[in-house]
Length: 159
Image (cartoon, rainbow, N blue to C red):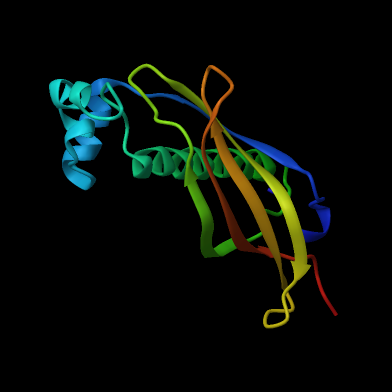
């Protein structure tokens, strides 16, 4: 994790990778998005998807988990080196969420986030605002999810 002044436009963070299994797709869907093509293989075959596929919300939730894990690991490494860890958040939400391709059983999605905008905060002088474009790409190189989000990032000592 970096202080606001250390972040550059175009910086890319690899959040992680996840392979979607049938039991996990169905468990998530039964709980949060119980549409037939997410919970039943036979029904999914008859749908416009043609096979069981993950909920878009599931693909987004996996990104969130991987991003939190990646940031935690980065913070722990910085602390182990004796470095101060900058505060991050809260996030201001997301926009332009797009589910571009279905995520089928066995698909492996690589998630990353790229810094696309930086600006200082007018309301919080000790914070900057970082905007990232996050995406997930399957094993075929196809982008399956993308969205933009903005979050506060701690600045170094300001006078």
